[in-house]
Figure 1 (cartoon, rainbow, N blue to C red):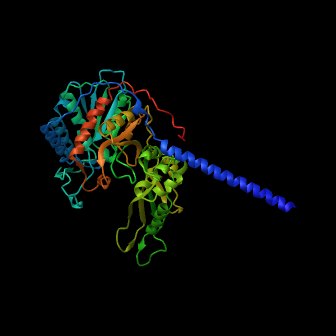
Figure 2: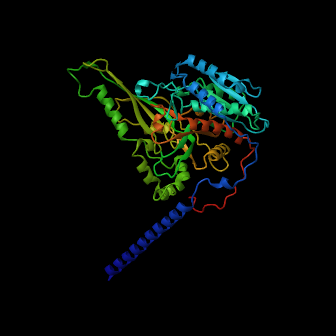
Figure 3: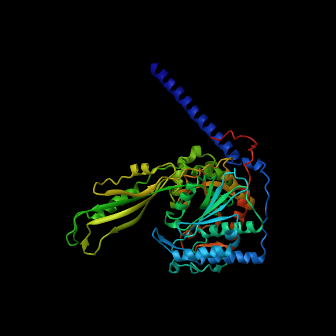
Length: 523
């Protein structure tokens, strides 16, 4: 009887447990389903009434379009290459300086614009506004480019600015002379039309961004700091418009970078007695180091997807995915672990999941018949926003005392800039983008590379990284790669973007948010 009673109690317990599990799963499913079809991040400002500002329209004649294009081509044809921190093409930088003054006469002769050379080759322009109490903002771009060799397989010489099928080919067309020339061309057009801003702004054009910006951007910041300048926000290069690049997304999306991954370079080295290759030891310095490198690659940094700004990216884009992806993207509170395992399978999406580990250099040996005494490797880590440089160093283990580990240099991930409904810079950029391209979905994003803007973190709380360069499948690989190019139409759009952006900044404050309703399911 006791056994029967015990079995009955166990049965009742399992029945209640099963019912509780089914009930919990049903509730979770209902919550996730409702959220899927109601959740749309950051849609509130569509209903807000924006402050009226005087708008200057831009209508270009065929001759003006021809001149605009010629100016841009001339900029691409100057090889402003940065090789190392101490080796930049100074003669090309001087030539570029002369070009700017020639093709933008209003900018460099206007009594409104104050121009200064910084670090010999970088430019700082100050455009004072009529209302001094409005906090200024700053537009950044960089003049220098990475090396390019036609022998690598370019369809046109990399400094020819040759037109092919509606595209201009050349190093710097998307990194970053399209922004340098686009910003200055926009300002030139505004000055020609009698424009005076309400809100002051600065333009910073660095000459050594590709080699860390230590002489250009860093010195511009030092100068601004000495003057007590604080900025509402900074806009630099970084992310772009992605059209067909994100698999499953319905339509193109503009991603505005709100942070950058940190970086660390670590040196691994092994020292051992040299010898002749005819009498090799059981393990050579190369073999020991190779094993350590293999262990690093086989044991990646922990998954951190959902703990950084990448969650905001997917949530802002969720409503543009079809099912079942929309269901997953709208409910990252539930599916982040699952999605992270899917994303880590590909190198380009694994960068969103964790701090990445890349062995970039391996040096050893001087002669084919000599066992080398030394071997060294360099490993580059791109640090996830949810980790610090110190935490990465703590995770770094090679499990071999014979391998010496040294931190060469590094820095933490950049602070995450605001991107909510009252983030002035983000919403101004978003308004400008959607005013030009109503079909675009705008979302925050994370830059896996680094820009000059990281030097500005002490004089502003909000740094954004975006230019409306239009990338289709295959185009991201052109960045620092072969056949870098931009369409003629897209360059004109970039000029118009900055032309509108500068004017859009002339409001005193963002509109008061008026939402239709708060989403109950914002978990």
